[in-house]
Length: 273
Image 1 (cartoon, rainbow, N blue to C red):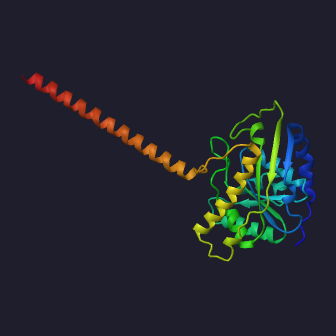
Image 2 (image 1 turned 180 degrees about the vertical axis):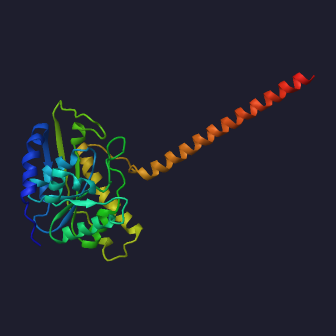
C-alpha cells in the first residue's frame, strides 16, 4: 500500500522544531534502512525524556516516513497545539474512558492505510533507576498481531541527558548527542493466527521490548538488567511497605496505650495503700 504524504502540518512542525533540535543535540543516527519504504508498520520506542518524542520524530522525519503518535486526548483540544496534533494525524488516547479502545482501532486503521504508528510500549517515562526500558503494555502487540504489519524496534539515548526524566530545566552544556538506532523487524510470526489471550499478548510484548532493550544495550555499550523494571510490582511492593508501616504505627500506638494504662493502674494502686 502506498504511503501517505507528509502533509502541510508535519512540514510546518518540522520548520519550527528542527532548528532548535539541531542546535541542542548532535546526532548519531543508525538503522534508517530498517524503516520500511512502503506500507503500514509500527515502531516500538523506549521513553526516557519528555523531549525524546521530538528527537525521535526528527530521526524518522528524515527517513521520509513520519510517525503517528498515540497522545493524550486533552492535547487535541488546546488551540494551536490541538490544531497541530489533528493536522499531523496524531491519534488521541482517551484514558480512563470507554473510548480507550478507539485508539487501538484508529491505530489499526492507520496501519492499514499504509502509515507508521509509533508506540511507546512502556506507556510513560521509564522509572528504571538507570534509564532502561520497563515492562511494556500490550497495545503495540495487539495492533501488530491484528494487522501482521512489521514492528520496528527503536532505541534512543541522549535526549534524557539534555532533559532528564521529570526534570524541569535542561542541561545545555556540554552539548548532548541524540543516539537513535532502528533495528530489523521483530519476528512475531509464531504468534499469528492464534487466540489473542492475555498470555499471548504478554509474550509478544516481551519479545518487542527485548528487541528494543538489545538495541539500547548496543547504543550504551552496557548490559541491561536481567529482569526489566515492572512498575506494577513496584506499586504492589510500595503498598505492602505502606501497610506494614501503618500496622507498625498501630502496633506502637497500642503498646503505648497499654503502657500508659498499666502506669495509671500502678499509680492508683499506690495511692490506695
